[in-house]
Amino acid sequence: MALIKCPECGESVSDKAPNCPHCGLAIAGNIIPCPECGAVVPKGTETCPKCAFPLQEVKEQVKNVEATPAPQKPAIKASEEVLEKIGPVFLEAKELYEKKKFVSAYDKINIALSAAPNNTECLKLEAAIVSGICDHSQKVAEELFQAKEYAKALTEIDGALKFAPNSQALLNLSNEIKRAKSRRKTRITVISVLVVIAIAVVAAMSIRKSFTAEEENQAWEIAKDSNTVSCYNQFLEDYPDGAHSMDAQEMLMKLQKDETDFWGRIQSSSDVYSYEQYLKKFPQGMYVDQAKNSIDSLDWVKASKKNTPEAFAEYLAAHPEGAHVGEAQSANEKIAASVPTAEEISGMKSFFSNYYAAVENKDESSVLDFFESVTPKYYGISNASKSDIQANIKKMYAKDIKQVHIKINDASFKVTKDESGNYHVTFPIDVTYDREDAAKTNTSSMNVTAVVNGNQKITSIISNKSNSTL
Image (cartoon, rainbow, N blue to C red; front, side):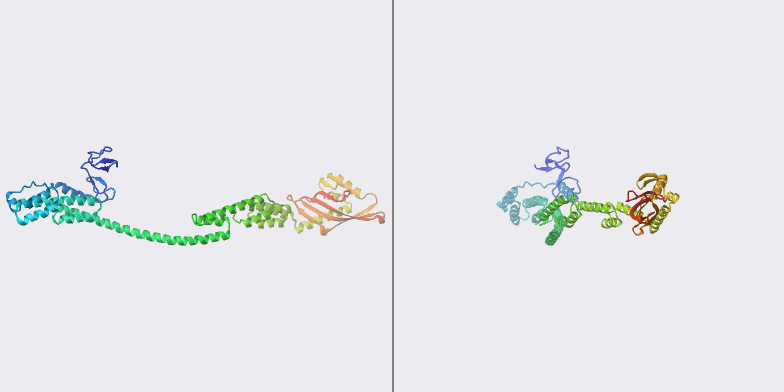
């Protein structure tokens, strides 16, 4: 009795059990071993489910063997005639046969047959001995076949065929073993080719490994020479398990610590130079974006304080994609709008020349045309009315003043514009007072600051002389 794996459920079961206790499959007398892989399969299976071996031919051979009645061992008795002619030789052959020493028995019976070639008892014993040899050899050969000992199985069959060259069972089994051997040889050949290929691949990998080691050494030298975080990171990405990977990690950690310490010292600085030094030392560092943003902000503060086209142009050139590009462009537009044209400047000069001409001529009506009904700032008066302006003009000509002469210094005449279109004008004037007593005639200089709105009306006019009404 032997334990086998049930071909249905895979559980262990005795080969003598009528049925598998786990799944109910019939076992005893209903299973056969695959001669190729040894797997147990139900009778009637045409192809082994494990190795795809064709079981049909084996099934037919088993059927033929089962259909052939097993030769019965003849009960051989020695007749008196045999005993007289061959004596103890026949009896010795018979004894060896009964002990299943078939080859020795065959040799002895042939000695007897040489003395009595036609003796019936001797011929029957010879046939029984040959049958025993065939049965024994077939059984041994089948066991060797299942163990895939093909050469030994064929040797066993060839030995038996010497005694029974026409045994169909032995011949069929021999052919089946030869086919299995041929298939095995083919597999061995394929495996040999695969082994050769594998050896070639290993050799190629060994060569490649030597090349890779050389490439890694070159890459390591480049990384050390560069001594940057990005270079060490790239080296570790290319050679994560390389001979220098630990060295690269140590250098990377050192650089990162140096960088973190450096950044900690400057991150609150208001000095552009500090951030430029960081970018120079760590061009691909962890804080590059923060450093660039800090430089951008500091440059914008500087440009805003200057508030000139040149300052904003310098910012835009240094930061074409900076955070304050829109503000810089807008500021430039405002400055451009505040710069009057030559025609506008000339117009303002004419405007104030006409204004002072009316003042010189004491033409109060013309003077008042230069103002709105209420002027927010008129020298020392807030929200001055036109009456306030008339009174100031009369006051200017009081006492001994005969005439006032006002001259604008064109060389220092400056005009700007604001967002509302108002003109802001500054200029110096020289005022000469002709008096009744010529000896008291005098000239005074002052700076005038005025605002003229879009309606060409003065909304503010003051001078650096607190008591002046000009």
